[in-house]
Image (cartoon, rainbow, N blue to C red):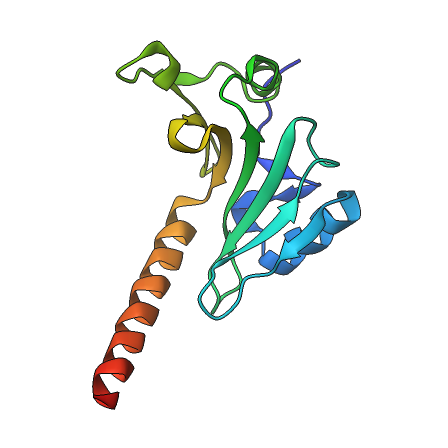
Length: 160
């Protein structure tokens, strides 16, 4: 099977995806809403067990002002996901592997049309995370969060 040419989930191209498009597609695919982003949250949380076997959660991160999708992250219980790595390699080709301090600290990375895909072990939480990231949009999300924090701090200081 040849590598994919674009990163997409649920039939939506991630490079140009909006939150509303992916929310609808994820729900239609079987995601169960746990919590939508709010005033202080820049991501939705869904139960993903029906979407991707072995996963427990999927997070959809977005820029509030533009509604652009910044990241999608699947969370798996446990640290070893060899079947998922095999499936990703079939879909996206050979990963670039970044070695960590230990063999089990390796990061597996793919890059497709501006979308960065990464699979990594989160030792502190005994989870594996599979992330699809749109770097410029993630940068905008982080900027929006910093601005919101600065505004909140300023408003708090004015009260005292």
